[in-house]
Image (cartoon, rainbow, N blue to C red):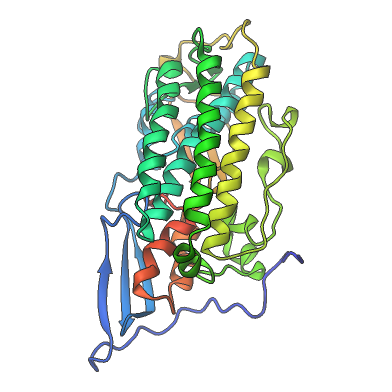
Length: 389
């Protein structure tokens, strides 16, 4: 497939004129802000012609917000209770990127053991997030057996987080300089058993959901992202890979232990809701394989934390940096500026949700049947707090 490398003349980014509702021909309908079609509280302001959407506007801000400004009012270590909440279903990526930014500004070298533990932790988080998402896309099309399976099995993955970190959702495990603990005794055996069960579960999901004639009929052709949209709209992650773009920061710009792991970038050639779903199914299998590799290769001894100053009175040298990683939804980045004080001068979070949930969602919704809007929302995989940050 030919990949777009620049803006396409066929794309129109001008703001359309608002639809005139005074004629009575069209009706305005609000979907949300507490609709299960999205991970978090996001609302869509829809204008309908019959049951077809002719205009869509995204509204966010119904959940916790203003994280970037809050971080300027807290010292560096206190911000860990803030960053986890920017993307609730996958807080570990925020832990890692915040830590990596602080480490780069401070010149801290992370021990080898901590690098592997961080890598495994990120892939466990990817697995838990994808299990939730697969249940969400199935439920959005009225197939409620699969979300019962995936949300129940996600609890087993959360059990592993609880063993390793002491918490199930907000772990605050990855900290500047390394991690807070190593693997508990017997963790490897229990984790391998859960990975084996996850493989079997995905086999069942593929038969029950992805081979389901109704799911195929409703998701194929829904929300098509063409290759020439990817760069102009800033589309990343599985949303881009589903239409043939082999882009993954774990391969393109390796970090942590990813350059030592054996895996290929998952791509597809079906740029619709079904293709994006299948691409994520394959990436879920990939995460299981990467976790197994980490379990085999993570050192069991040696330091997991660098020597650190008193973090309650920690002054980071002046400077600025941008660090990034591949989260479940694509490139996730932190821009951080230090002025040499005990408080961060500026933090900016670059998350995939901003473009996917606003620019892309508002375009793809036009022409969609109202019954399929929840499925379209979920297929883009966005987290509203990451937008209103």
